[in-house]
Image (cartoon, rainbow, N blue to C red; front, side, top):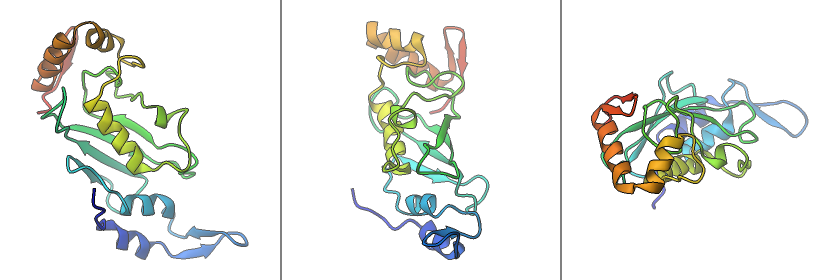
Length: 185
């Protein structure tokens, strides 16, 4: 995939005037974390993913990513995720929530996401791009072996055709079991 210069790159670097914190360390005087700014400016997202900044482009620590899978069970759906980045990023994983209620074995009905790189497998060498690709992969390859939504995982494992039907019903806007899902297609 070809890397494209992100339009925020120049904005991030312009707004980040360097000051010395301690001998040999640099910091960003406006509170913007240069690490996250650099990672955002160098994003190489799949064409089916977009990023937005609901608090404005000066708040790089809070943003949203929209994922529209182009294959698999979730083809045609649009799923919105909020990202909250810690001031100690990349030493701590961003906090990610799915804002779209979705019938998925790895995302519970409250929007919590089961993705190992957001928990125990996080390492400072990982970045926002890695997380977005991980989220995208959850939609192309849902994993019933490490679920948050145990009911969806059981259906996927035991009856993939029923799982597909449930996903379609949920994305079209309707009930799956006792849970109502808003249309996301």
